[in-house]
Image (cartoon, rainbow, N blue to C red; front, side, top):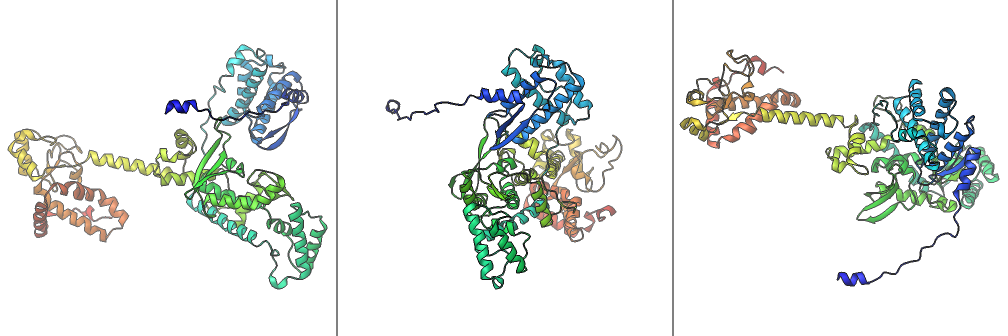
Length: 612
């Protein structure tokens, strides 16, 4: 079978390449010469202006070329925000050179000492250690690219210095915390309410916004239809368009408000900028995707639908070498992540077709259709304020979209019981533990787990020594079989089994050798401490007293709250009912219960027994 399969050749296809590829060297040379160039990052163009780097023309050209290469495909600056960070770090490095190292004019003058002094200069200027580390890493990345482009120009000590970022202490970054359940519920409810409004708005495309049927005149209806026809034909309608002005005037004469007319008109055909906030909030809370990944979703992001599930294909730029990932989510109605994205695809299809874009979040903003999400700070503040969302302290809530992923992860962490193998989805176990589990939100789970573990360890360490009737008889007949008892030797065993050292609930192996006092002194352990003492031995002779005490404990449920009862009697009840009584037969327990019921003197309760 293997030989036959190997002999069959599959038909291939001829690879086609462009006849001529543009040479990037010319563009790089222009960038170096002008210190001003335009790059395209994540489908967005950005103009980088380094003309302020004066006084060191050779070094400025070298670093400008390095920054140009960093912004190309595969470079470390994959987004506009990262490119801005490189520009900011480079300008800070330039200020340092102006103030401390004016003689550094070209790449050959940059030494290891110069890099270390730059690190110290930022620290002396009061920059936060983590910000200092980020700026230092950006400058060193540019120097690495410059050294690769001009090998041999950078001094040998400087090349070795590029192997690490800084030897100065840094502060461990505090990971973002998740939102509490109350805030997360308020966010979800507000987003769901807006989703319902958006769905109703797209379903009623033929109605005149904010006008009741009884107030519709034929002239006003015609003006509205003409304005909508312009949107259908051109995509948008401007404030200065004659048909919009006519509709505006007719509405004003009819005492119909016009404050949101432009938004109402475009909202019948396109998503608006304000619509993106609730939709992104829902997608993030339901899937846990990074906000930048959600913003970068494409129109073909849904893959392999089957069995009520679908895969979301997204790009995580930080995962170098494995940027494109997939997450399997539920698929169905708008209450599922897959169904919600399908709704967005349906609503944005006309605008996406008009622009020829392949992005998901095509919407109308600032009087035009845009294929990408712009700044959302103002619309986020407006959204939370419009819904009156408050934080845990009852103050107006400030939504940080990047914390929504932590909120989803915290909820998933609780559902998985802290099992990191199930919890780590989309990242490694180490990242899951350090960045998503080690945050304040699930800290009470960790503390409860530690408390349970310590209680279990204490229970195991203080487990009482119980002798069944058969074991008691065997030890009495042959004291050498006594293993694990607090006494040894025939005399000690005889004294233990005869009842000479009996205390209330147990036989004591050493009343004057208590672990709770100095040797030779009487045991000071009060009340039922014998059940947690290593000297205690429980025999059938103590069953009546134990059962009488157990009856008293259970009667206390009528006078104490459940929490108070568990705190006071929970452990001793578990020891008697779960560890001691199962070691004896039903006949022995029934006989002991009859003895306990007939002898009221069996139970001795000091005053603290009934104290709350």
